[in-house]
Amino acid sequence: MFGLFSGKKKDLFEERRKKQEVWLTIRRITDRKIARESVLEEDNRRESRLSMVLPAIMFSLDTPDAPLINCLVKDIADNGLGLTCRQAVENGRVFFALWVEQPHCFEGTVCRCSHLGADYWDVGIELDQVTTLGSYEQFREHVKALQPMHV
Image (cartoon, rainbow, N blue to C red; front, side, top):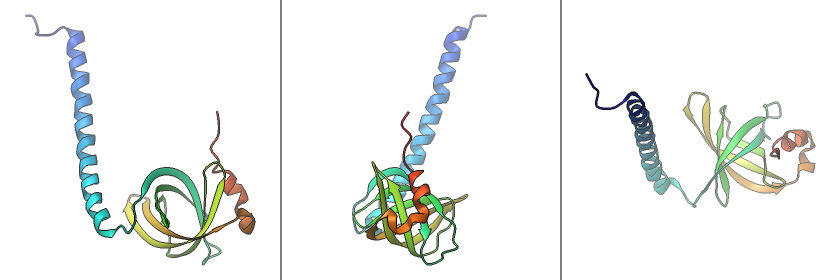
């Protein structure tokens, strides 16, 4: 016999149903994540943070043979940064660089490194001082690679 909807409308409703299921699932994930983090931020944050995403590099000053670490800045505060890295980072002094209109280089101290899951680590750095790229000439090419490409 006859169906309630024609084939085209039935497909449209099915697509929308699937999309709504995606939206609801994403909403549940973000609600849970935000709720959990907001409780932690209230308890542990000394200063407010500004969320952002920027590529950056860091290098251990305490362990000269340590590899250069590529990371993403996830938030920034007056005295430090929150990073996401693909490897664990030992506590200690680091050279840190990012690019916002020009290179910005710092010396800082890794004060926190916790495993997020898979191959991702949450790293906190307290920035101790601004430095120049001239002081760390061996990293010049790596820092230049942080510059966004303009298409």
